[in-house]
Image 1: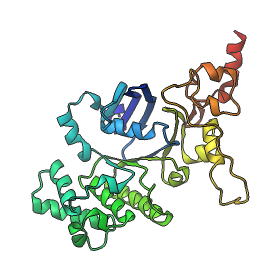
Image 2 (image 1 turned 180 degrees about the vertical axis):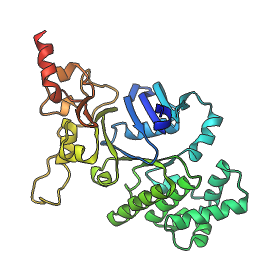
Image 3 (image 1 turned 45 degrees about the horizontal axis):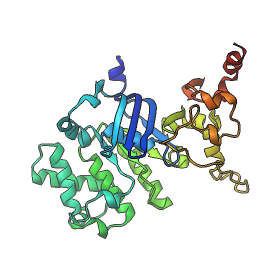
Image 4 (image 1 turned 120 degrees about the vertical axis):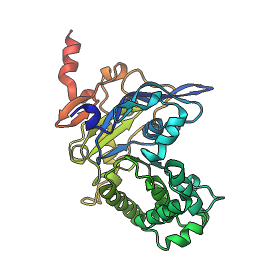
Length: 334
């Protein structure tokens, strides 16, 4: 089996920048990952780490000042960065869909739910208006919306946050995409609704066989549902591995810091330790490791050299000089 057949989506050395009055903001710096059909991948990091920009780069829905400056995004082996806007319009929704983090601003308040769902179906398929209506009702039932015919006539402001998020999932899935990107899908929801939405996404994945990319700042949200977790900081991938690797064998100082700041059910008396310092200024990236200014274990080499990702276990990789001290000492001795 060739690489193109093995992976549905491949991102290779992706660089995305925003060109502002104050200078170039390098939001994504050399991100690489592969996604197989039916797999779930989580992208984790604090605000400004580049995780959402990575997702928007794949969809090519960046702001006017944003541009992919380097790299490849391969969908079934074909580089979509070379496609024109007409081809991309057909691609979005039909092949890859996205659920945005705020359903209230993603849905148009001046149109009914039914109108927006029907429009999404007709835009990407050759269904008639009646067939599109039936498909929209079917999708609302699939995502657990009660009285779907009534909801079709309602407007976004008439629905709760959880219901609006279900509508957004229905809209994203109505054309049965190969890849679903969920950008902070549970941010605006309470804990019980969060669990329902994540369970819903998992059940729909089994039914439709799609791959999922979940973008979040909350490690706990994705602990049980991801085949691979990718931790990002400063536009770069710090660490990647499965849930056991990330939670029980963290190999990057930033990942360790994130885990120390999460409450643990088995030890609620343990004091939480926040990550010191302030988030990185993307306009003025450090010469070496992006996390170096906030790292308690930073070494001299961290100031001037960017660490490469190295294997620290089976399928577990991290970009941290703490894991390659031997190589560091060899360089010091040269």
